[in-house]
Amino acid sequence: MSDRWCFQCRSQYVEEVAECLECGVPLVDEVPIAPEKVGDGGEDQIAYELHDWSFAARHQVDTTLSDRRLRHAWQGAALVVREADEDRVDKVIEEIEQQLLPTLDADMEHIEYSMEGWKPEQSEQLSSRLGLRGVPHEFDRDGNLIAHAEDEEEVDATIEDVTARLADGEEVEKVDLPGLETNKLLTRLFVASDRLRKNPRDSVAILDFTTDVATMERIRTPFGLDSGAWKPIVANAQTIRDEFESETDLFDDEVVVEMAGKLRTALHGLI
Image 1 (tube, rainbow, N blue to C red):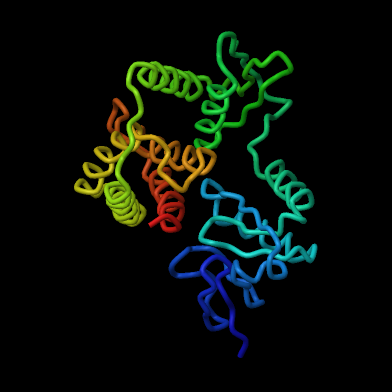
Image 2: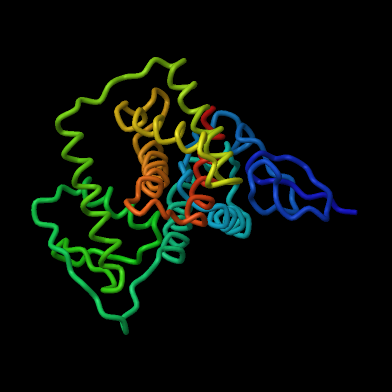
């Protein structure tokens, strides 16, 4: 009987188990290496924060790197590689990103949105929110947003939400949260997202979650994280909160379950 392993947390399972019970990702047949074993002693390493990627996408990254003999390891959802391999790993990440991005259908009717006056980081936030919602889109050479006409209502709502939050952010200065309080916040969000992925109608978890997301939006990027890792986590949490705050109160259980699972995995590597 052959054993299998979780490529993220390196837990060992018997052959019959398909997914890691802790991380929820598919198992691999080879023993994953520890982060400190990436490269020879003294070699510089770099990390790719892939918290906002799906389980399947991270598994594809892991498999592709293994197939190409690129030594790598995982710290939760963060990919660790040799700095010397950065260019080759960048190509792998870019290839898989292109494969997984929801793309526009040339045969469908499109709608164009002018992004005049939007800063690059604002357009990036909008694109991130649309991507998390699974809305195919792209920006043309003039920076205008192109989407399917059938997604107009979803895109309109996302633009309105992002615009409102950016306006609020200009009026309210971000604050620093002490390390211990940050850890408590992330732990509460982890517990709430774990409960929501099992029961998206858990009223206590919903109340706790929406309260803590409001705090999450007011604080600066926690110490030890870069904004590139923090922003997707916040966007994920906001997407779940937006479902709960829909005017009809008829939120999509499947969206909440999927996004809560992703958020739980991202937070697991931080607490």
